[in-house]
Image (tube, rainbow, N blue to C red; front, side, top):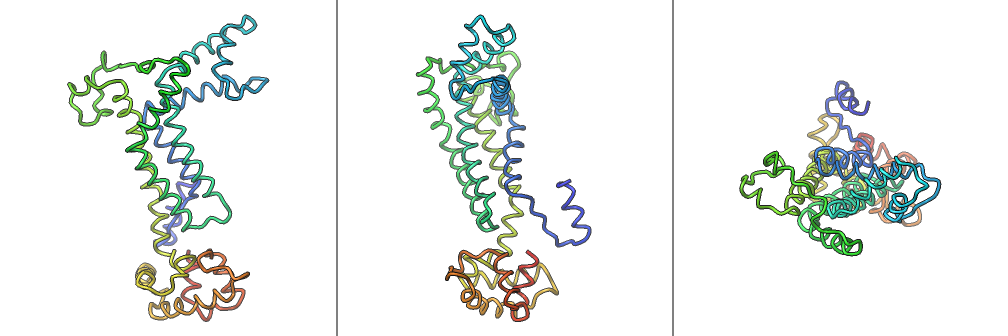
Length: 319
C-alpha cells in the first residue's frame, strides 16, 4: 500500500511530496542491500539458521553457542537430527570466513540500529533525522575505506582464541566455473586468479555490500533531504539564525515551487519579525534552536498570530 501512496496523491496534487517513515526506510536499506549481494545474503542466512536451531531450546545459552553445539554433538541424549544440525552449524561457525562476516555485519548493524533508535524518538524532527542519516552515510563511506582491515584484525584475534585457520571457509568456485566478472568488476581473469581468498572476499562481500548500502542511503533519503532544504529554515536553527541570505533564498524557492501561495516580500517581513514573537512566547525561556515545526505552528494559532504571519503559517501547514 505504501508504494502506491505517492502516485495516488500525485493525481490530486502535482506538487505533492511523499516522505515515507525514515526508520522503516532505513530498515529497507539494509534488507535491499543484502539481497543484492550473494555472500552477504549467505552469511545472514547462516546466522538465521543458528537462531532457528536454538529458538526451541528450553534454556538460555546466552553467548555460549559454540559450547552448546559441542555439547550436543558429544552427548548421547540428543536425537540424530539435533546432532547432525549441531555438527553442520559448528562446521560453518568455526571458519574464518564466518567470523569475518559476522564482524562486518556487527559493525554495520550496530550503527544502523543507533541511527534507527534516534529516528523513532518523539523529539525527532526533519532536521534531526536528516542530520542523523547524513552522519550514518558518512560513517558508511568511511567504513568502506578502512573498515575491512579493522574487522580483519578483530576476527584474527578471535580466530586465535578458537584455533581457527584464517583460510578456512573460503571455497573458490571460480576454479571450476570461471571468473565471475559481475562480482570482480573490471579485473582481468589473470588478475582475478591471483587474488587471495581475503581479497576476493573483500571484493565480493565487503565492497559490494557497502557500495549497495551507500547507494540505497543516497537514493532513498534524497526526498527527505530536499524537503528539509525547502522548509528547514522555518524552525529550529534556521529560525534562530533569522533573516539571512539562506532564508531569502529559501523563501524565493518556496514561492517558485508553490506559485500563487506566497508573497515573497511579505514572507521575508513575516520571517523577520516572527523570530522575536516566538522567542517571547516560548515556555521556560527555551531557545529558538530547540523549536519544532509542530510546536511553532501551535504557538502561532494559540496566540492568533496566523493573520500577522500568514506566509509562515501557510508554509508550516504545507510542511
